Image (cartoon, rainbow, N blue to C red; front, side, top):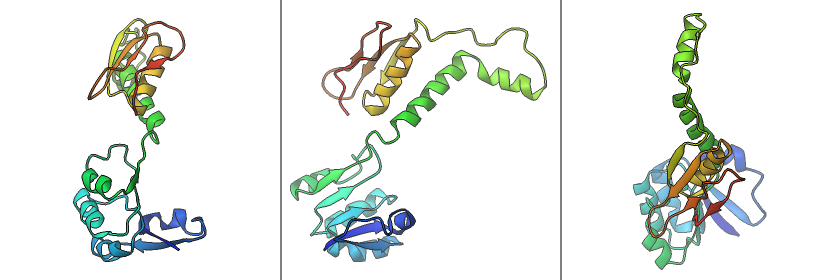
Length: 190
């Protein structure tokens, strides 16, 4: 039997759906979580404070797999996980589409003067000219962060005819060819 320590907030989503051979131990507080740590072989703690997660991992001597919903995991004690051979999975890419759409919406809101349109609507006025005449077509856009989300933003912007360059932290550079063909991401890392 594999012991999985899981946040009780996830219980309605998971109870009755876990594979045979998994014994869930649900926790409702930080103190209860830390009491369960020595039994844990698998852990899904979201949401939990980084300091509590680190304390849990330190105390979970049998831990073999830790999963987090967040894309970034630099808040975890990565050295400890690596030294102890604990498998780490994260939520990279889970929200890429919705976050990319939100970013694109923000760009279009600014380019098209959407706030002024909404204000005019609130006043029951018809604008004689569109407030935002800027276009994404032919614009040059720098996307900072070229993982799943940045890659998706770049693909969407290219559909609008923008020339997109993506940059990432660390070695190298990710870029999207400035042609107006279909999306083509080169050099991206998750």
